Amino acid sequence: MNIYGVVILIALLAGYGLYVTSEYLNLRRLKLPPPHSVETLYGGEGIERARSYLRAVTQQSLLERSTALLVLLVFWLSGGFDWLDSLVRQLFAGELVRGLVFVGFVALAYMVVGIPFDVYRTFVTETRFRFNRTTWRTFLADRAKGLALAVVIGGLLLSGVLLLFLHAGGFAWLLCWLTVVAFSLVSQWLGPALILPLFNRFEPMPDGELREAILRYADSVRFPLQNVYVIDGSRRSSRANAYFTGLGRNRRIALFDTLIQQHSTDEIISVLAHEVGHYRLRHVTKGLLLGIAHAGVAFFLLDFFLRQPGLYEAFYVAEPSVYTGLVFFAFLYTPIEIALSVFENLLSRRHEFEADRFALQTAPTPGSLRKALERLHVSNLAHPNPHPLHVVLNYTHPPLAYRLQA
Image (cartoon, one colour):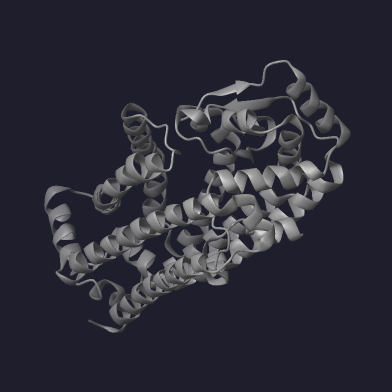
């Protein structure tokens, strides 16, 4: 194993070790009393239920992560990537077709390893804690649609990247970056209208007290709201949520039907105000720009490492190619990905504080935001006292105690 192999192996093991340490410390944190503001919300029985849920979810997550890493290491160190590349070269002509098959096989293998854990999480863990409402028919349909989208959209995007690196020379990374940027913008624009409805029904909110209250609030903050959509989230889970998505005319605010069922009108308006805050404070745009910069860094580095023979030797592949280099670079990129995700999570948590502040300043009854956050966290069995390292690595939203304090 050469220096590239050693670096990648260390990166994978270090990333895994960091993840395990974070999960272990987060579980240990369950033994400590949570902040008083949170403890009184859960109550004794609620705290124990949250602890049981978090232990179950963490144990399964650790097993899934460990299994995926073990399968990867066995396949890698036994020469599996070279075997797969040799098989693809024997069966298919042309670099593009070979690349699609090679990357597709790796992605499919990763998905297959995760399916048993996905099934157990949905139909055992989530059912045990009374979250799951997904039927087998919905579960299988969701996976089939997701796979079809990955094949069609992912295949087209991958084809463009492979063709550019095969034929565009030194400008390949720049053209790939621009292609991904265009794809991201189109996805943000068309996604709410074409892709999301494949998985959920989006119904315009019917006339009534809630809709009138929402429109009054939108008018008070000069938010260009043409309609509010209700998602049939209860078809899959009892969890409540709301989000803002899309660009231009396809921009929409969507409320889960579970949110409407479980919260008062004032609380829903405060949640809506939080989502409007993300829009007014340009958080969606900032997140999109950050993602674009992230992709630019990745493609720039990819262009360099595709030309390094040592990268292919590290995985025992005899004949270098763009498609194998693309997969191998993903493993090499692990430490950078972790560092960037830490920064992105930090920025996301800051945006959540800002959106909370906007809601407090504009909602008709500011105290309702506190009630909504409390109810959401308790009903979702969120960790009452998460460890700081776990928050830094994983949380896109601040822990409840910090949001209540703010």
